Image 1 (cartoon, rainbow, N blue to C red):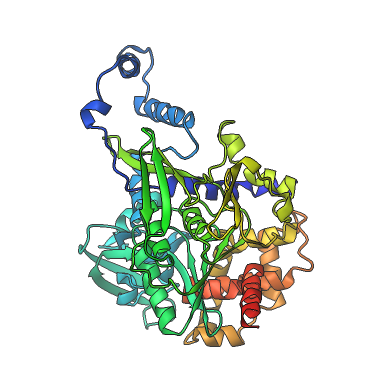
Image 2: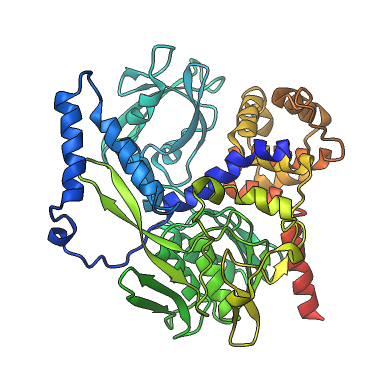
Length: 532
């Protein structure tokens, strides 16, 4: 049990992301005058802060007191009403917009230098010819290497105003006579890609994986779906595993691609009891195709809206494990000083009328320990151990029984391998830990992959025992007494996928890591049954 507690921060972090990412575009009807009218409760807080500011015996940073106060207030509301400090606002805004303005590289601060992992596809750095392994030494003649450089400020040199000119001096080992290259280009909007992968699993079965529901996600999804349709698919796997959610409106638009005109998509209800219903339009591009949705315990919010709408309309098949269970809608509101709050303004219900929000009356600690509860009660491995409440039973138009009260229960259950070896490899394969190890490996071996295509890499490159053992030593698994005997093939696959990601991008990573995936195996079994 101690091992699983060790990895709870990962689960908790993903769950918290669900609350941080979620927003909506519902109308907020109260006028500013009404909301911010003077009253004694607000006066009391203002007066207390003024007393501390002007009368307290010691100097106190009242900004920090305000931050603590705001967080304390929100913690007493619900787990998904969150405060965004001003110094974190821009990063959060970029996530939700789906882009940022900069040069477009992913990087490590390696030793004392900015080392490019890879240039982001479609970004200005990629178009200019900056490659993985390059070291950025100067930005506009400003030195950004050495121990004296403040690492937290580096990003401010790389980002900037849209269309602003930037000049880089880059070190590229062994590529030129003097190893130094100069680049001049303009900063542009760089996409934060929502579609991690899009490819064909078979002649007629496509696969799309979404990592969030940002402003730009629908356009990315639509483009990926069109390409797969042009390639001849008539069935689609929509992978929403570990997707923490995002904009409600984005989820609604994606659902609309699968549902016929006038099918109910979502119901929301606010404090005043006002009910808003969203219906599918006639523009769906995949209304006659078959869809499979993959969920796990970290699929939340907008992911659950998509799965719930399809399940309640008897469209497609939900595969995996019970989802996170978040049925609250947030709206972002400015606090006037660069900070903001994402405040819960409504509850949402699936088309049959069920709420999938988990109870949160026992506090945030209890709420975010849900993974441990699921592990203990056995529901991660056995569908019959999922607790359901008969009073929260609903029926779809075709007579299928579905339940509210905490997440979307899949139509087809796929258990999780909760063994130490499996969870360890799953954790490190998607963490920056293995990625950093692979970056160091490529530093010494990048020439081996020069000119290699992804197909060449897929067919001809094999991770040998030496690299696996080096990673085990690097990760100190032996010291932690984690035995990976019997999991060698999974470790080799994870290492190969991480190499592919740094060389060829996230699509290559998912293509490799998905090989032998239990949920995708189940999809293929269902597809075969349909052909018989």
